[in-house]
Structures are given as C-alpha cells and as structure tokens.
Image (cartoon, rainbow, N blue to C red; front, side, top):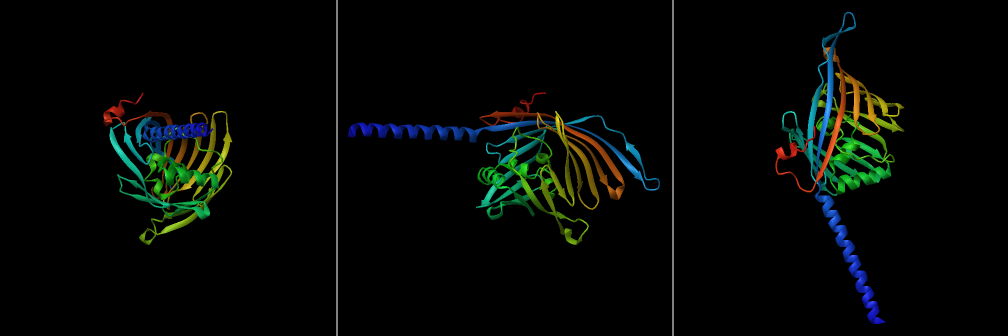
Length: 310
C-alpha cells in the first residue's frame, strides 16, 4: 500500500514538473516573439488664407495629389522598445524605450529628441500619471495597464491610454499615437473617468503650465480644450466629431471615422493657425496595416524592408 502511494506521489510530481516546463517554454516562446508592422497612410491637404477685410477664404494652394506615407515599426518581444522607420526614405524616424526605474515608476524615452516622459502608477486612486497629466480609470483598466505597462513594459499600452492625443507629450509620441500599429482590440469594459491635463502656455513667462480637465461620459469626452462627441454608428464606421485647442495660436476640428472591421482610422479635418489667418483642410486615412510575427529579429534593415508586401 505504501509502495502504491509512493508511485502516485511520483506520478503527481512528474505531472506537475511537466506542466511547469510546458508553461515556462510557452512563456519563453511568447517573450521571444518579435513583431514587424507596416503602415500606409494617405494624406490630401489644401491651404486657405482668410481675408480680414471680406472675411472670405481664399485658396492659396490646391489640394495636393495623394501622398502615401509608408512606415515600418519593429517591436521587441515585450514591446518595451519600438523603432519607427520611414519606408519612403528608408531612414530611422525614432526609437522609443520604456524602462522601470522604481516600484511604481517608469520612464519613456525618445531617442531622436532625447525627451523623457515619466509615468507613475498610484494604486490608492486607480490613477496613472503621464508626465504632468493624471488619468483616472476604472479598476479593470487600471489592473490591465499595471500588468501591461508596469510589469511587462508595453509601450503600446501607454499609447492606448493617451490615444486622444491632447497631452503635450503626444507631439513626441506622434509616430505611435497617430496610427494603428497592432491588431489589439481594447476591452470595452476599460474606461477612463477623468483626466487632469497641464498644457504649456507658450504665451506666458517661462512657459508656465495651464491646468484643465477632460471628463469622459459614455462615448463622449468633454473638456475646456478638447471635446469628442459621438455622432453615429453605421454598418461600416463609428463616427465622432472632435474639437481641440492646441495652444493660444492653433485649433482644429475633425470628423473621425473608425472602421468597425479593420479598426483603421479616417479623418476629415481643419487646422487653424490664427496668427497667420491660415486654415488647412485635409483628409487623412490609414489604408493598410500588416503585422508579421517572427522568432528572431531580421539580421539587418534590408531584410526587414523586404518583408513589406505592396
């Protein structure tokens, strides 16, 4: 009887060891997977100047022929390092690196501009500080962000949080914020409640910061310098109207279309530069997303470029 129990014990230990080994191998495989993503964005732009005497718009530059911007991103296995390349010129645009520096603190670095963006998690209030801005989110979203950003170092999880693009740091992160780079779909239960924003006032002495808030209710967001209003949902798109103030000299209006099938964005917008009485009208839409997974990083840039499918 004792001998039989020993056999059962050995069998259980062996099964546990096998399970642990398989789980470890699966995790190692996941953590070794590299990603290369290709994006194509079509942009059409025209320029108008407002005549102050007649208050009429005069077109000074006709709509350009379609310019197709082609970009490539290489993601490290944990997405804590992302390099963006311009496929039109075959040059590196920027490399972004996310590093944990303390228990609840990280720093996001951009190699081109040498800018650093501090990120801090505050568990007592389910909030995340990005630079000087505070994002209050619901518990499920906070736990997800803590896992993906704090534990795994995922830059794309940071981008999902700041995607509305009104923080000053979004200019630094524009190559990531402006386009869809992954096939990830964010859980609809993840919600932002409120954001406290501190924007630089370039008209003030020493570029002091101006504080304002954005409140999220359902599908809408409402703030002093940013407003997103849900318009309708069609068979193909979810449509929003967005109004924003960039600074004391510039503002924008745009209609945002999100393709329900592909998740790709299309924008028809206007950009106003008040000091020069200039209005830009543009159409901007992402026409392609191609994501390739691989076990090893290609040996050189040319090998990565060759993965691109026209």
